[in-house]
Length: 456
Ligand SMILES: Nc1ncnc2c1ncn2[C@@H]1O[C@H](COP(=O)(O)OP(=O)(O)OP(=O)(O)O)[C@@H](O)[C@H]1O
Ligand SMILES: [Mg+2]
Image (cartoon, rainbow, N blue to C red; front, side):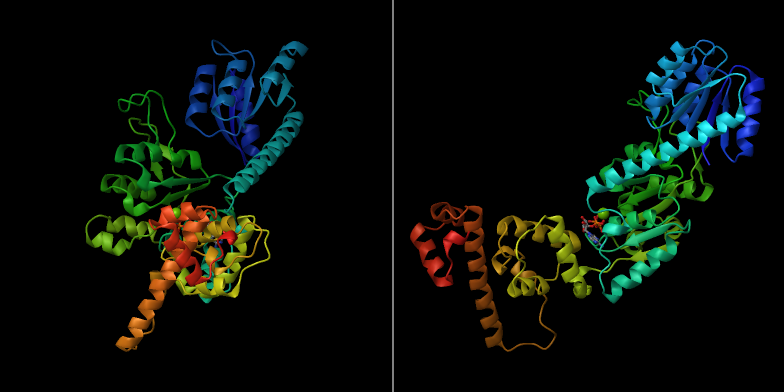
């Protein structure tokens, strides 16, 4: 249930506590003095510390402070044979959850333990909810499933794999929602109360990535002035999300492979063996088979990660979801206006979305800023014209191509004019300057396209 550190200089007491707590199903670690306790606190994820107040050099209050510093949510229970109101009050002020008098009454201990673990769970839950709100779009509940067949297939896989311990490899173009799906898997798993640690493998240098993943001991390299826990250790029984895995350098790939095989590792420069209990979800927008072919990605690591692959479809292959996604992004952007014109919807539907959901979100956010509380017309939808879906294979006649090109050109001009006006807040001189044309030339365009500058 919980990992409990028991600290007492009397072996009889630690032994007794060890037995009783193990019987209750907890994992127990024992320290016989304060210094050892402090070492264990730095090295291990501990849920509860039960410590004697009077220890040798490093006393119980010091252990309490160190434990709280390492993890403010840790539950600390103090024991002493010399219970006085004063020390009790001091200990509570420092963050002790409760105070136990010796000789220990185990029923009382159980009660106190249960109560503090419960409140810790609630606090963790609240924190998780707060983080979720802050992150805005994470979690299964804020995820749009859509009604496309492609997405239904993805969600079916997500629901199947989430409750298992299987390693998941998420692939798909940039912005298709790999991170959102990774979070959904975590939320739908039994690990949901533990943390999800997301590591961007592309954002770190090789040594940094290694020490970020596995931690390091003090002095392991020049800048290692203190021991640092790696993400694997921090994720502990939770989930570790290795984003942009294809960017990981071969030496780090080799290390990761070993960890996934042995389920154990040690910190850089350290010898202590640490269990790797985190569930692994990896993601990439690259074609890993091509990376393997180019000897940039280890094939054996690929097989380790590819236990349960899920490929996310690009947005252009799930057009049916566009409406629901738009509603979702409008709501997220806080849109209060009357809605979207048909032409605006057509503009969205006619685009091929190389940046997928992220690009759609950005386009909608921008449209909402431009529209304020007004309707969303085509003018507020800014998608590059030339990315629109090419016509089907049948080759059009030259005249048609020319007509299409001409239409595109004037449409682009109109868009640029509207864009400039919007950016200039409707100020015509400023818009003309932005476009690099004279005011007169701008007036000509406004008339040509029937644009009313006051609208912008
Ligand atoms: N199913 C979904 N429902 C609602 N919003 C989504 C969904 N999927 C993705 N998004 C939105 O799209 C954006 C991009 O998603 P995400 O960051 O998960 O993409 P990604 O595949 O990890 O992209 P990249 O490869 O560029 O890292 C997110 O900000 C999120 O708001
Ligand atoms: Mg991502």
